[in-house]
Length: 108
Image 1 (tube, rainbow, N blue to C red):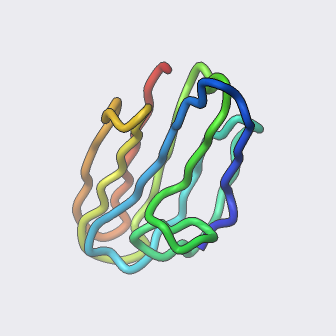
Image 2 (image 1 turned 90 degrees about the horizontal axis):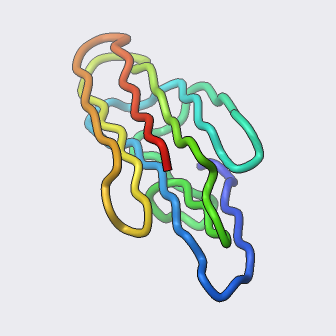
Image 3 (image 1 turned 90 degrees about the vertical axis):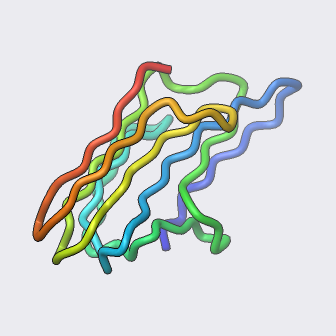
């Protein structure tokens, strides 16, 4: 589980969420967040936050101008990445096979 969840109290809180799902066991991921870019190896699929909820979530008065998640499968199976802004899908892709890479990116 990754520990990223950023909350800022504000009358309008934008919600940016990154998801990684599929039948692959694990993946190496790269994610852009409000504070920069991070990489993690051997992340379990599906991607869960520190509260045990699906996805990584950013809440704030505004969202970064660019959202990105990429994952390389550590074995076989499918990987699907998805980025949502305020509950609407703004990017989604799927890859299949051993060591395949899936990438989702969007301007927010």
